[in-house]
Image 1 (spheres, rainbow, N blue to C red):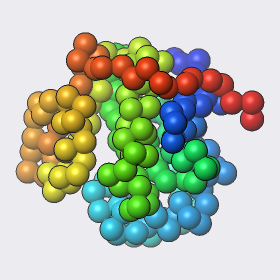
Image 2: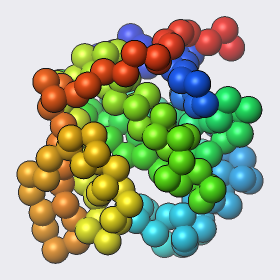
Image 3: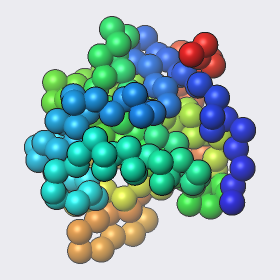
Image 4: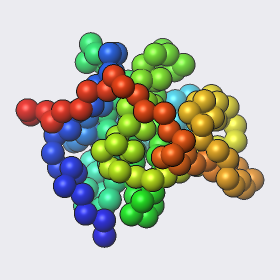
Amino acid sequence: MIKNNLKFKPLILRKKNVYLKYFNDKNITQDFLNSINNKNINEFLEIKKNLITKKDAKKYFINNKKKNFYYFSLNSSQNVFFGTALINYFSPSEVIMGILIHKKKFWSSIYSEEAFQIILFFCFKILKIKKIISKIKKKNIRSIKKFKKYDFIKFNENNFHNFYSLDKKLYKFEKDIIFSFDKE
């Protein structure tokens, strides 16, 4: 089991237009459920295809709370929820990363760009991870382009997925990310 002292501290990372904080039960709103159940939004997720209820979502978080993963809420500087991110330890020095922008108007925007930068910063600077891995469905062209933009390298594939990784040595650190602990 990988130990991490940051897990239960109310962390916030900010850029100009976006902030990231830990996702919790309070974030399971009707807005969240509507987007996670929208076939146009969840098309590339590895989730069951039936509707996810509030009870299902809470059960998922309760079951995974003690595991080695971080689940984040992505919000605009105007406090509009627009996405989630998952960081899951693969090994002590590697994580698996996933990101979902829940609202189409935020796709391919400065918000998704800053969210991606914040998540990379969190993995490499806060967690001190050496490598990030991501599994992306081959049909998810927008996501593949985003990962390639940040120098992720395809290292494997199967019939449905491409597997990408980014080594810490290749990452160009952002300078305008503010790291703090929330007072909640």
